[in-house]
Every structure is written in C-alpha cells, then in structure tokens.
Image (cartoon, rainbow, N blue to C red):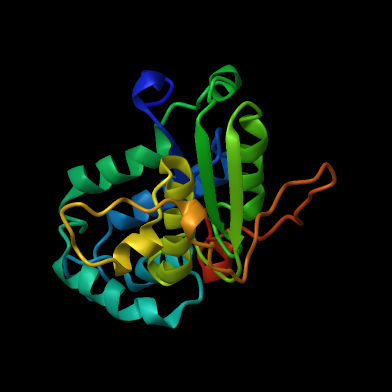
Length: 230
C-alpha cells in the first residue's frame, strides 16, 4: 500500500513479516504441505491428517501448549479440509505465488515503521526481521524481537505486542493512549500527549541489527515435526 500510495500511509507495522524474497527451501516445504492437505485424515474422514495438523501448529505456534484448543476448534469447524481443494490451493497460493518486493521500493519507505518478530519464529527466524530493518534505511525504524515468541506472536504474547504497538502509535500520533484510557469522559477534555505520561518499562528493548549479526542454520521446519519434503 505504501509503495503504491505513500501519501495515504502515515506509518507501517510489520508483525512476523515474511522475508522480501521467500527461500527455495521454504517454498519446497509449503508445496509439500499443500499437497498433504489434499489428502484425507488417517481414518479416511474429510479432515486434515493428524501429522499435517501437528506440523501447521508447530509452524505457527511453536511449542506453546495453549494453542492446542484453538487448533482443535479450527480443525473441527474450518472449511479448510481435503474436499475443499480450491480453498487449500488459494491459501497456499498466498505463500507460493506472492511477488517479491524490489529492493529499490523498500528504499522509498520513509514513514515510521514498527517491526515485531518472535525470537522462536519457526519458518522465519529473527534474521528476517533484521533484513527488513536493513532494507529500509530511510525510514524511522523500530525493531523488537520478542523472547520465546513463535510466528503467531500476537496470539501467544498479546500483552507485550499490544504494549509495543500502543507505544509506537502514541509516538506517531502524539496521543497518550495509557493516560486517555484512565481519563473520565468529558466534552471539553484535552487529549493527552506522550510527553504528559512516561512510557512503561518493558522486558525487551529496541534491538538494532549489527554488522556481525548472524544466526545458525536451523533444520527445516518439516524435519523438526517428523515430516519430510523429499
């Protein structure tokens, strides 16, 4: 949106954003998962196979045990099932067929940008967030790596994600949402600004990528859940 109509975008929030260019390894594994989703469950019913459900849960929620009930409900009620081949294809197309954004376009971003990323993101490790940071040298960037958070960090770590997002929006807009939330409703009330209210302290701070930033290569996310793409 910013690259098409920058004058209409005041700020950007990138939460667990995929890399500018998808890796060949990830593309191969997404294709494998897509094809596996076309197959019925172990008992022949029109549900996703249990190993596929386990793989998807691990990809998006990591080792978080609280996600099990949410995933169980999704499997039971979702139209994402083998018989709905059109939907399965459409969902995976958003991963397999998206066009990469040219580096020169990233350089055009000049608005404030908040980058949030989970330290335990399975398909996209923190290095991806650092790549985004480096790709926008002309933007007012803010990068936070959330400890122990998986890909769906807004679900597993809502408190810290909401706090960082609110602080960022307060800074961009000049509004103090913390103070405003505790103020009585009054017709002539003046909207507080961030200068009137100190920012709350967080367990994580701004993480700025250094020139020597490196991450060790991890096993593919399919291999880590007992599936193979070859």
